[in-house]
Length: 446
Image (cartoon, rainbow, N blue to C red; front, side):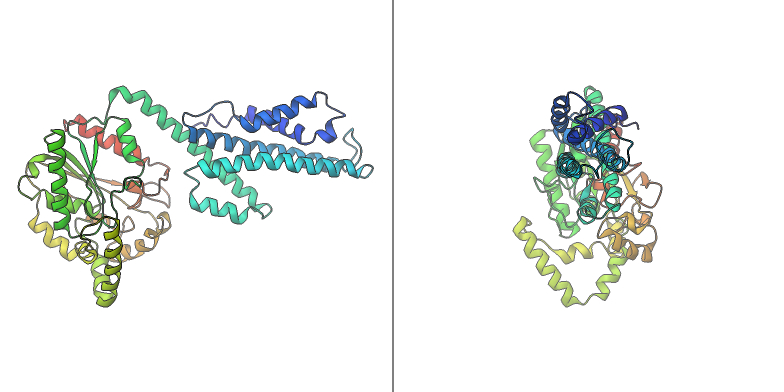
């Protein structure tokens, strides 16, 4: 994809203006109208690029990135000027003949260039989502290391440029297809979270996915079940939520999209009398239908006293956050391969409901964010390829199954499938994946 915000001609022109303004003390005798250059320098600090994206955040990202590019260009020109000053190639006083001139000019140039740099850096630091903690920490650590800081600056510019172009294109795509309402399904969506998370009002479990779905016409509700409880307990909570939705909206049925243990909770809910008739489809995402074998191992190896201590701490904390009766050990115990084998025997698919499933895998441990880059090794040891928690053999459930990954070392993790880190993954647009998933439900009459 060609990045229209990286316009070489405008960046070269602006870099020349910043260079001229920064070195006016030396060049003023050779170039007329220096007041214009100073004026343009000020304007550039406010408007460093000609084409602006659609949102305030992306505008700040693009302008900050433009300033960083122009800083590199103008600084390079200033360094060249400084080097040439030791020769007689310039028609200005030689440094050795007038050192005061160059000292003053150097201080002015540093001030002007620093203004451009920090203007740009602060803009991208406080507006970019894709820089993440990793690149920000690298910038803070390597900012004062010569040569290395240039590579980090290049990484920042490249990352932000991709973010601006990608995010703006998504906005334009959604605006273009808005009249089609491709995600306006017959039945609303019920999105159900996995274990150890809650549906917080200001911290969405599903990242940027719900907003993308709503931009294309989707109606969304959430499971609101406890973060850690048995499958049976969570199933009853989800069942009550389904009845609440159909009663309040008159929609008759819902389409469920459930992640991780949420998929097992929903399968349990469908066996509660009077619930299946209100569910059109159940799509499970990275759900351990056959359990996690390393969970069996850990529960047998970790002393019971330590398990009880962790459980007590977790339950007390989550009770304060809104869980009425959290049960850490029941939640973990229900994720073992032994439990899931028995669960599957007693909870088969309910007739009349479309079951389908999705899974993903990491290609290497390093592709996952903490702690999935560690648990990946455990899952791989016991069951092979996995998403950092669940092995690929455990995902498949229902009439259709889709396995996802990307080329290279990264892959797609358990957390990536709910946009946990709000990260744009090359070759996998998680928001568009869900948009097309829901659009398919609409096309099929659900």
